[in-house]
Image (tube, rainbow, N blue to C red; front, side, top):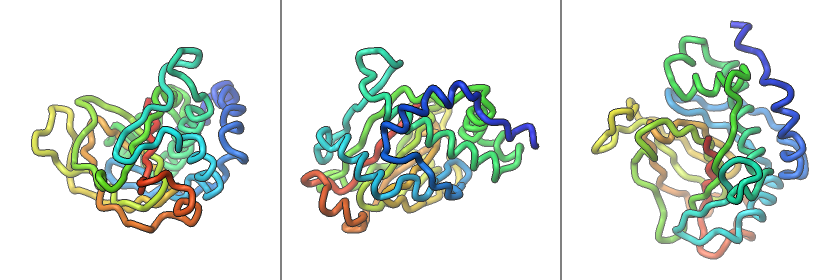
Length: 238
């Protein structure tokens, strides 16, 4: 099992280090243990309140209650790749979750869930995490929850970062019309607080958001949130 503890290649980490420092005033330094279900890992307190406030300032101009938004996508240097620091933030979160998943699960457990096997490959350096898309989902008075669904009919490894009011996030409940690659089982509901990050396969694993918990966001959120917005889910996808 020790061979699974190799670090990702140094050149890959160095390539992103400067961009990550530009994203946040300080590096991501909290190292909480994630909560693990059969299909997902939640990293509690992934961002401090100061980091959340800084992140909100970068995306709030795009936030309209009840609508999704695009931040950046594609390879560095392309027209749609407009925020390298946010790509770097997503990759840092992938790497932190990978370190903890490998430390907590046995090889058999990792092998049994494709999302955890993928994050293991990031940990070993065999396939480093590369975020190709940064988007957001904005919840307001007309969008208080998200019904049970899968995002695609194939794997879509996703890091979901929460800002604002807490919500219940359920994974694993079989959809009404499951596609051939859907993976469901006993549903697990996890409460996501502002600053938490969740890693899962959004393409194959059913998931739902709701209910939200009005007024549960941190103090800065109550003062700085965009008009009519209750929660923002920032999505980093490979």
